[in-house]
Image 1 (cartoon, rainbow, N blue to C red):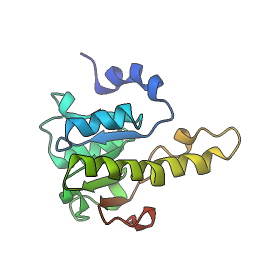
Image 2: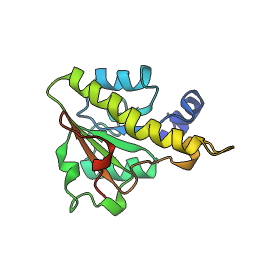
Image 3: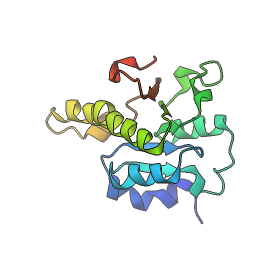
Length: 157
């Protein structure tokens, strides 16, 4: 078994140009499957990696930025700017909904209003690869998406 980068590298081509995310251990596996199959996100799920599954939140926060991935979690602790400073963030998405179906609905909205909106605005420029132009659309920001979320204009910076 190689490094995390060497293990994931061969799979990157299949999801090139897609949102790159780092999924925390508290996210249900069914939600991760939805991200991968329906939304076509490049999702690193920490539960699938023995060396990451029991890491502390601070390590997940640091690794997500280091690996150029948006951190997705259900853990509201990541909203604490003292423990997880905005200027050190690769981008954090905290989801809150009472059911897995509700979480899927939030992911669909987030995909359309944040990930795809960034890609479409950038792709309007000829010769620009959207994923290269904005690998971390929430870099330095956090977003708490919940059932009452009004839309993309509520990102904390």
